[in-house]
Image (cartoon, rainbow, N blue to C red; front, side, top):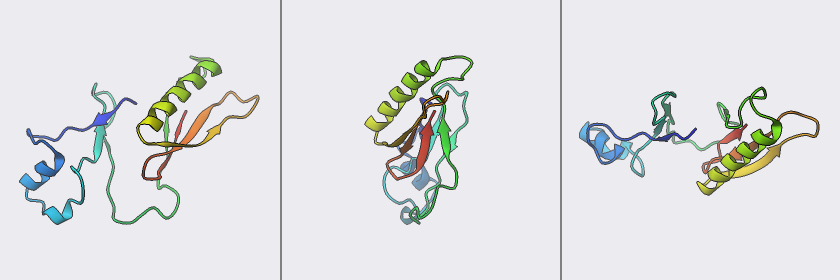
Length: 126
């Protein structure tokens, strides 16, 4: 997806600084710089916001992302899609994600890698 962390508005150095300027109490901000969204740097894709909640994950995700990087079946053969998926999975592992399993069956024109982000949220690279 090549998204980036959304920069804070109004010249603030961090989101924490931005929220403090608006009067949000320090105790409501939690840890870190308070960045909680990503954006497409080219402005084509939607902004994605990650809502922080105090509860830990206890059951399956409320939603599941499939990140399509391989391309469509009509546009690329399975070997090309597989190489693209593996390259993106490797990049994400270097960024802190982990591989759960490879989703491939002999004779199927489908390939994906199931992954976990650093907080344990599941997603697939397809």
